[in-house]
Image (tube, rainbow, N blue to C red):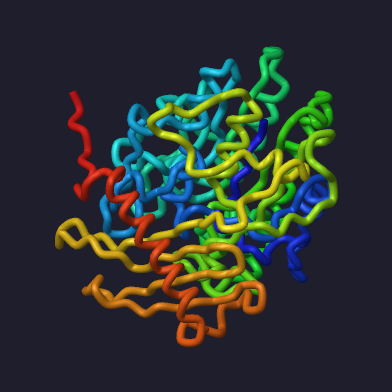
Length: 428
């Protein structure tokens, strides 16, 4: 099984999702061979919380307030014992497990992906210069092999991760494998993949286009390795993004909003699943699904199960995508983004939302007062761009959606870690 995660890939920045100026033939072919979801959602509009949800199959709200923000909330720190990942579950089910690429769920204490159930990890914690592999702010080296500093100077980061995945696929060990391939592109820093000597530049659509086209090439190389080793027909491949595209440069069309927002452009992402002989080819799937569904799908396909006391917040999509079952018509999907400032002891909700069927209810809170918010209600079937707020004319739907959101928040408050910033562990 292979899960490919792009970083900040906008909904409209892939050819098969209508992009006019970026060539993505490998991703387009993947969609032609599998299922292209048109209502696929990340769990969160920013990196770390979204990745934690994909890895654990559970809402970020269950991990505490600092996992519902990214800036100002202290470094998010996922506990490998308290929150077992899909890597751990697949490892226990007998799979070879590997993580290649951006980890970004244990930033404070730099825990390795190996600590979370991955036999092998080659990657980075944050976002570094694609060629020097150093953090721009501090100059700290940020490329590791199983926790130890590692480097291939002058080589595009995602090429390194693709190379590692290709090597892992070709390993003589014939046990089934699970690869989590988390590419860095097209996240900043904005660098031309054809100019290794150029330093990072300013936000530029032109540079972003080149970065996504290079991402497509690296994805294609890994898919080709599956073909070369006769594994393409029996490997589940999932390709998606951790959140929507960044403001100013990404194309999230026809959606409004971007990364960091709970408007559709911040959370609706490209999502493609391919499994020849199991999933249909060339199908567009329109029902709303999310990242936690992907976790549940991988686990079920690999005969792995989460701990009984910590079930997935998603469902196995295989019966749905093959037409053997349907998703519950009223299944809600929830989202919440906080604004956390540890030094000021500030823990406020910035936005929250629920999607159910065609309806989406969105609350945007005042900056310093969670008792006051602006409510918006959209019918996404008729208003995908969220331009017509019908809250005043659809009072009963508004009331029901508001109640759903509040009930979910009560549930999250019962399971979430209390508000307290993660602490850096002292070194022995």
